[in-house]
Length: 206
Image (cartoon, rainbow, N blue to C red; front, side, top):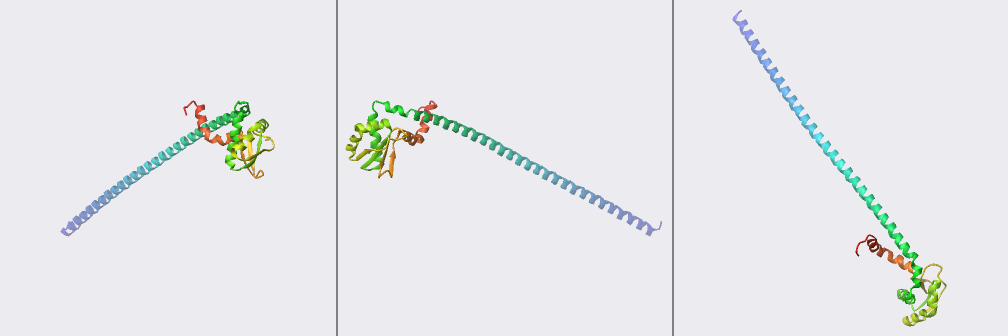
């Protein structure tokens, strides 16, 4: 082989080796990039999986708290409903016993006090008093005159009350009135008494 041909052959082999080396380097770079991409994808997938799990755990906790809160609210509502029914029974029982007050030995003094209170609330010097039949007998006997003198007012008996125990005082021809029957007094006191009555029912000390 001629020297020129040998040089060409050697040069060709050198170029081929360089090309092969470059191919190998490109292949190695490509594999490294592919590994890096796979690693990033794996890390991203892990991060997303962790985020999803965290969101799922937070949602589960939210739902659990919601269920617990709903259960507690239902229990509290049920307890309050039971309490109110129990209190209603107590006040209804007290209401049923109101007529027995008229059998008290001091009922005359009680009626006089009811009348004074009503007059004090109305702040009038002339009024008509309406009462149930039993209370009316006491008023017509002497209490009406006694209270009239004490309060320096003009008092007269009106029509007998059809409902209620105690009395109702009317003034200005019935345009203003003060209901001081025991039933109405109980209703007025009911809200303020509910808590203390319930404590007594539950055996608590006031």
